[in-house]
Amino acid sequence: MSLRRKLFRSALTLSLILSLSAGLAEAKPITIAEQGSFTIGGTYKEKPGTFSQENFIAEDGQRAYGDFAYVEYQKPVKAKKLPLIFQHGGAQSKRTWESGPDGREGFNTMFVRAGYSVYLVDQPRSGESNLSTEAVTPDTPWASNPMYGDKTLYVLSRIGHYDDEGNPVPNAQFPKGEENYQAFQQSWTIGSGPLDNDLNADVLAKLVNRQKDGAILVTHSMGGTIGWRTAIRSNNVKGIIAYEPGGTPFLFPETEMPKITEARFKALSASAMGVPMEDFMKLTKIPIVLYYGDYIKIGSENVGEDKWGTEFAMAKQFVETVNRHGGDATLVHLPEIGIKGNSHFLMQEKNNAEIMKLALDWLKKKGLDK
Image 1 (cartoon, rainbow, N blue to C red):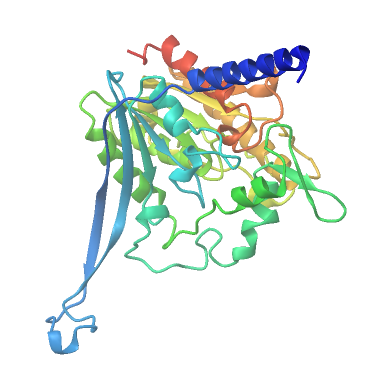
Image 2: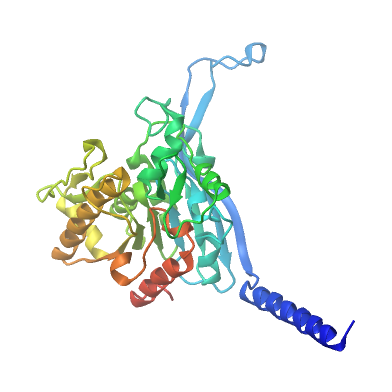
């Protein structure tokens, strides 16, 4: 082997070693002070009678347990004072906040790296909280037709669209390829009982109230209304980060109901629910930020873009109403600040570190990062 080739190979080897070392340096180990899981809330229904071992499969004297939340948590060494509690959206679970479809790091550990204790919630009747005291009903979201988990939710989530042959065409930030497409489609979960967001908020409030100094809620999609309702139920909510809230009602004073912008398919339109002014005013006592991604357009031929156009219009009215009553709500439309190409699942996409940085900056600005 010539001296020139030896030098080239030596230089190439050194380059690879330096590259690997740099990669390892970027992914610093996470030092965890405490981690674990538990359930919170829940109830049971009991069948009258006496349990008998001779007829041990009979219902008599037995209970059906359910309607609790499953919580998984991690606390880093020298954690910040206020933990983050993550509430997922409809037909989802705590997986929303875990690794993305291409395996990239999720918010669950990214925020731990930033010094926050993180609590991931599977709301009652979802994910690992899949016991219900009520039977599934026809109006349980997505339960009546499992095929909705394919193209329907792909389009409604603005992940992308489909070409003339029916092949998925992802947006700019969603990782491309059939493997990533399938990984995303395998993240859906169908509730084991009717959707009850007052139940979900009751249980989430119990979790918030267990935090000595309070907590910051991080919500997504249909979980947005759960966050608003939890803040009404608990004074321990110190702030809310809401990623594309919608699909369930925004809250307004019952005497100041908003204008409804209808989607092309009326059932997909944003909705609102009136609450007493005294309850609504609780939302004006904490800082709130709402983030929305790209591909949002009322009247679009893409049903997802049109649907989220109506949600964005409702979000504007919600923020205006909170602020008009002395609150501190901020609406961030990512394309307007130069961040383009994100879908409804912006926390899982290729620029999720950039999305997270916005939240970290907001937390610091509001004094919630101590």
